Length: 224
Ligand code: GRF
Image (spheres, rainbow, N blue to C red):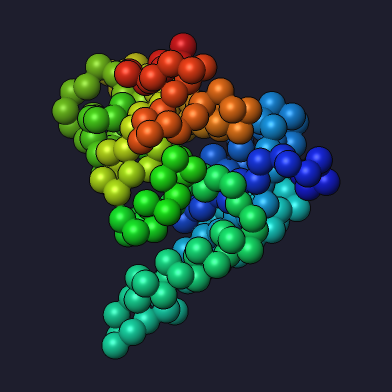
């Protein structure tokens, strides 16, 4: 993955907690030129995150901000965690923060500092199934369709302004594994597409709302 692109190229910090398949899709899209940006940092709050090794294999700079090692009075110290994370983001000169399977809830203060410059991908058709275990919940609810959503991050968990979604059918024999694999495959197209809009200037944050190609995004774009 090249990091020697022209100055002025938007810089992405990708935050992960797990396998990092979205991070890999984003890094590849940057390397191929589909997304006019460079990944300057891949940071995890979990030292064991498999995505860290995948990032290193791609030649990307990685960092671990281990929440468990940042304790105060025997409890996780969120302020210290967020201050350390912020230092890493600033050191990487990130223009945008891309949450890609990052499993920590960030404080309103942190989110507000990055508002309009921080995206998340969530494995459901928001506003359905905010939170965890979305595939199991879609199956349990008997949903006919399921999918993934990309949104700007706001202090409301999984509640920030939606940008784009991709839907998949729920099939009669689906299990959590089969459904999540189908959604994941869509995520790997959806997220680079939205990041391409953001880094090319098509997607703007204006007065607390997303604008795509100059028009307010009243409803999220549906990826075919
Ligand atoms: C994805 O399903 C994403 O929607 C959710 O966490 C998962 C991360 O997967 N936020 P990966 O680590 O990118 O493979």
